[in-house]
Length: 228
Ligand SMILES: Nc1ncnc2c1ncn2[C@@H]1O[C@H](COP(=O)(O)OP(=O)(O)OP(=O)(O)O)[C@@H](O)[C@H]1O
Image 1: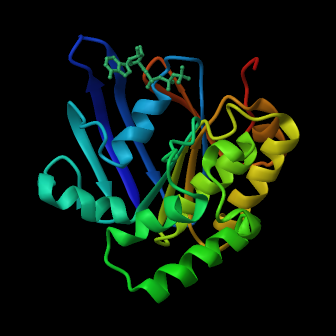
Image 2 (image 1 turned 135 degrees about the horizontal axis):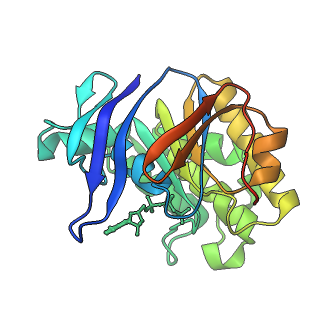
């Protein structure tokens, strides 16, 4: 479902973030991307939803070649990809419900479908009773659960998370991981960049380690392998 072949990324300032990466990720896999700060993890993640364009090489997502994708086709690609960030990126003036519904309204669902889908994901992340709250009225863990709900409400085939537990304490992080596991159990492909050694070493999954722009390790049920 995701293929990268000899992918390089050099940013405008001359920094080379990825130095020839090849990998394949199948439908339904759950993958951690680990590595030191500045190794290229976020760049790897951003290639998948075409936030950055490769300087060379090919990135193919669900049979779409991102090197040649037309600009107007990028929104279509992104409908199949839910993205979750460390800092949640919720809209502060919208309620929990509205933050999630907003993601659906752009694809023109009916009001009844919107209500059903939003309540379904709020139920999954355990926040049905906070639908009318504003983001600022929630804890960090709750805000992250809203951002997960928003990312999955369109039932994307791929969920990408860049350091989703980076701002959360260990107990809250474990709760967030249980939600990711539920999403994974439904067959969704999950790719998560993380510095969370405890989680990688306890909730065992495939680990792709990136160092200095290269894949230096790729193991099923792998370990974190760095000092956190
Ligand atoms: N937009 C950008 N413009 C220029 N250089 C960038 C840009 N984004 C990242 N870089 C550089 O590319 C390299 C890889 O960055 P990247 O964010 O992919 O690393 P990372 O592994 O995600 O790091 P961290 O764990 O600290 O988030 C770094 O040297 C960084 O400074």
